[in-house]
Image 1: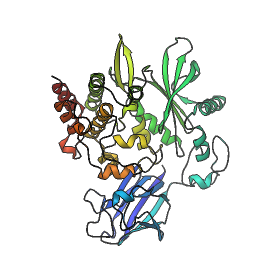
Image 2: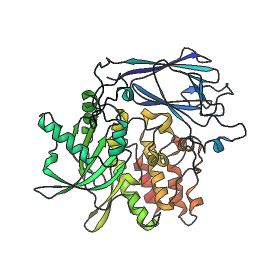
Image 3: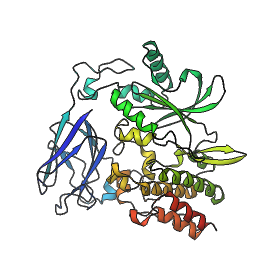
Image 4: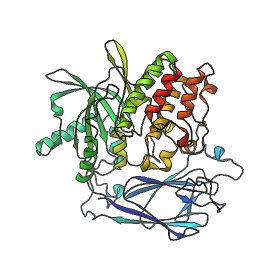
Length: 455
């Protein structure tokens, strides 16, 4: 286990309150009632002052455009000029600071202290599995397992196939391969796409000639045997899910800090690709069957007790059956479980900008407790983007996307395109309601409403 991180309030109105993190989670501090640290009476604190993200034993803090800034060990981070509005100040990039054992964080009259209860520490130097350099200072002595340093990761993250094959070759020589699929039975082909959570390749079975997609995910933290097994065990819970509008999961394998998965290949690419080919948006005639099919797949997932957590046009793939286009939900469980296991590093404070426009507000505030209603918001945002070529929230160029999630207003669909049908717009606008109780409870309800809107 990676240990625990404990954040204790040592002075201020909530003195003595402690927050313990033993898995990936977030903490929001500010004067708004939705904050985990709710300090309504301190005028030195902004509505949403800072966001803390923890993947034990690592922690990162991000000032959210506060007026007075966030102090870490007496040094000020963030803050804006007094004449600036939060929106004006948000046009600047706010610093993200990694926290360590013993650090002190001060906002207004409240002081926090960071304490790390680490697991047994390794006395051996940490070496990058790619370059072999000692990177102990980078990774921290409290973490255990395989690791690829930030420099090497930057070089291979967008195309990690060569690294995967080298790692598998080394593992086969040591006869300790941790796999379910025989990757050597496949001829690896072209890179289909890459993003914050991994790269996808086309592959073909050497004997059957079946085409599949191989997704390679590279952890951003050290990966212990326990963490690897835990992640793969969670993925196994999704393998029996079968639905015509869900990409089939065919198998997996893992070595060191690399994970790879065989998935059904969808030759039509993603909805994001289709939107780009169409000049930035789809006609209602083209978008409607995609929306309905995706909602059917999502409704099935919700009925089975699953929440996707990362729905967006890039994760809706297009296949062909009997000459007709078929939409399928992809990435089921991969991003969610990778993230919750802490293997993706920091995501709420990180750089996964592609997901921010499709992330509901509660996914920041209640990171671990996302429900089907959050997928409904993401699906509403996906439909909105398909039909308008824009995102639901107001978001100025250069503005911190986290502030847009927390404070941004939702622009009604017909304000973007007044020619869209009123009843359709009402369905999508309801899916995008800021308050969870005002949305559809799950994808099945949204699907039924969308069908009725087209009658």
